[in-house]
Image 1 (cartoon, rainbow, N blue to C red):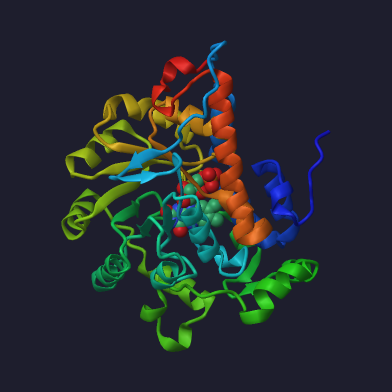
Image 2 (cartoon, rainbow, N blue to C red; image 1 turned 90 degrees about the vertical axis):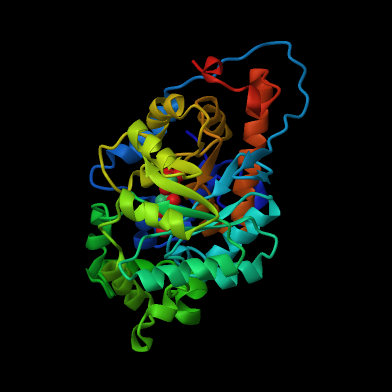
Length: 388
Ligand SMILES: Cc1cc2nc3c(=O)[nH]c(=O)nc-3n(C[C@H](O)[C@H](O)[C@H](O)COP(=O)(O)O)c2cc1C
């Protein structure tokens, strides 16, 4: 049976799986389920991992093992690695100021970081914490277009030039754990309250200093007497625009002169529509199995989409990346880079910035080692011929 390191020294953690194990021990059940869980039967959540496991790697022998360059061009800028930290909300539930820890971690590795609309730190706080960051912003389209434009202006002011519009969460997926863990949106069940007490480290770090964190980006728009974590949740639930469609995306294209990426593409026809609208890229994703249960794994969707796109748009892939070999497989099937979400979130939940950076280091090392073992001397040489 596999044994896991459970200590605090992040440099001793050997894999994302091991980091996951530490995060699980640190977090109370409700926060863990929020991080780990998928929708309904978790078919898509599991399919994401299975799709990577079903593909093998081709290897050639007697190829000199030079260090493999891993940098790549993403939307006009160089990223040191074919990865970026993707958007996730309520990170402050995992570690104090987790958004800032993730942003600094991305900056230290010279890769992009995507801040969620529903982050705990504000756009301005992230920029102040990481002045050199290749900083992208993720937009959930809002009903109030003045607020939406104000958010975009704040992003421009902070030097964000790449906007990611998420299109697969117009209706929130059926996350049963979320409803089970709360008596009402403001109160955990008694069982969960007791479970929180069994995690004194988490309680001391997160809850006791200032309670559940609020939503930094949305605070200015929430009535003053409602500026709590739960008030902000109520606000966002009432503000998400379920009527976002191609027409509204075209309007965002008009408003946003920087790079624009659509996150939520699983069908080749939608990739073609994104291209027709003049978008710069797409994220092939199923939101980590948290939205439509039964949706295609992202890797299988990539196999259908990449040949149709044929290099005319940049393609990012997320959902299920846990190893460097996953990144190699995604690249071989036509993705330019991957977005990390749970992988770096496990890191930040286990050990803050040091944990997130350790995850990035591990994925970098694994990707380079995997290419060396395959006898592939350049990331750019990867193609489906390298897969079994
Ligand atoms: C805890 C959590 C919060 C998330 N919040 C957001 C969000 O605010 N905006 C968004 O576009 N995607 C969000 N996602 C989806 C991720 O960006 C990403 O698509 C997905 O998690 C990838 O799957 P993986 O985490 O299994 O790699 C969230 C995912 C998780 C796990």
